[in-house]
Picture 1: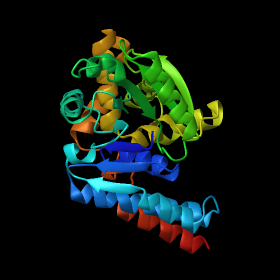
Picture 2: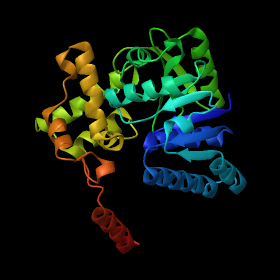
Picture 3: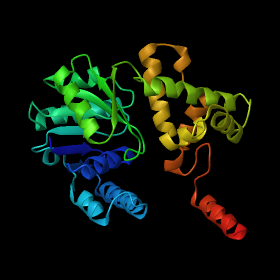
Length: 297
């Protein structure tokens, strides 16, 4: 297995492409938008430059990684001759099902089809393709080049052979694969999202402020990042989508998203990606922070 296609050039997609390319795979990075593909390649180059400056890789390794990635705007062209497709599009069930229907037409029947979904049913996705035994979840963590975990999710029809191939492949990438079964939220988000949602409820109920909630969890529970800051980093729209999937899947009110989260998403306050969430990430705020550091120095 040497030829990989990654669908979606956003944060997760470019991170997955980077990781495979750095491990010596030929990667076809696919997105409908040329601009998004250009931004993805710039991000990958920037991240590789950071690794070179830290001495983690050489300049030669950086150039080799970049040369291993080819960009495409058409799925049919991008998946020709690949052994594995990893779909990393937006966390939207209709979008993902449409992509897998296209893959069913464009790929050979022995191509393994993986999805980076963090909550949507692998069994449901596999239901729109022939040979659903080749469909599997490959849930990477963000930032992909750094985080070691890959949550490997078996759908109802996923074969033992495909599961073993993807588990072994994850090890080749320097990751630690963990096999789980197909239930809403799997393991990572079934535990993480209720904690984030409860943190938002705590803020919504006026128990404490954003900084105070995050400080309690960082210093009291030894979390590297507070839950509200983490929600901003994940994207509040993504958090909402995952909670909705879990709420619909389990029919349990404990997974119902907090009204504050719903309203923030409606208002376009999505976290880091939009420049504002529970924290302010705007350019003016960044400039203010730099100015303060300059004055202190």
